[in-house]
Image (cartoon, rainbow over all chains, first blue to last red; front, side):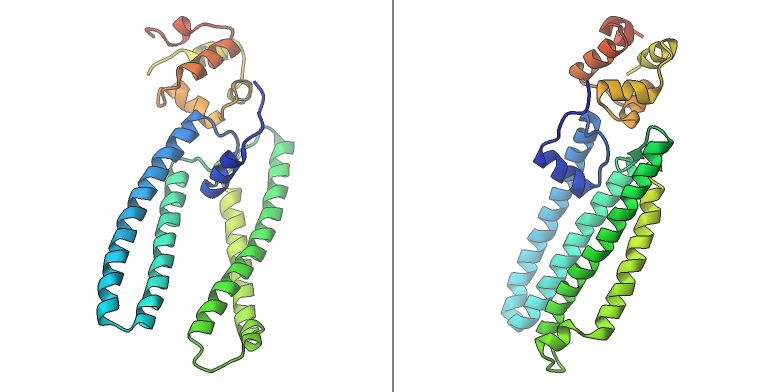
Length: 178
Length: 63
């Protein structure tokens, strides 16, 4: 009963929930339960958001409502991510099981590569998001090129990305079990 | 649900990781089954029984 090839759907689920190793029936059951709860939270929050936005649009300026809407969407996204991370961590579904010392050092090497890639991805995504926000709230009337190559922003987000990936490395390392 | 999976596994000198690998589940899931904290499906029970050269009656029935 060896390890069979996983479908793309399973790989996406595992990636989103941060699950490692076999995606067996216990993990599947727990992921379904967590997913349903996340959907209910999402359903409630988006419902509230739609109602409040509709009423706000009648009273306040549309551009202000749009900015509030963008931030509240980001907040809802973070709430859901936090819930998923907390639930998965509580059930220890994100543990990486290793079988011997060789496997352990292999997993550590894999983790290092993953963290470097994540730091890079984090930097790119944050720069895109904050570039768009700066573009919308461009009070200093800077050009697009000035916004992109802003040294202060790049250094700040570069350092943040490095701190983020180092923290993630130690958190993930603690989840590798011999 | 109480069961004799751990008892039979230890009697066969098998480690949790070996049995988990054989059945195709994680060590965590096997540990939960042995502790009676997770009720496995019939399919998984059969797989565990096969891997332990045992049967469902002796592993899971009236423990």
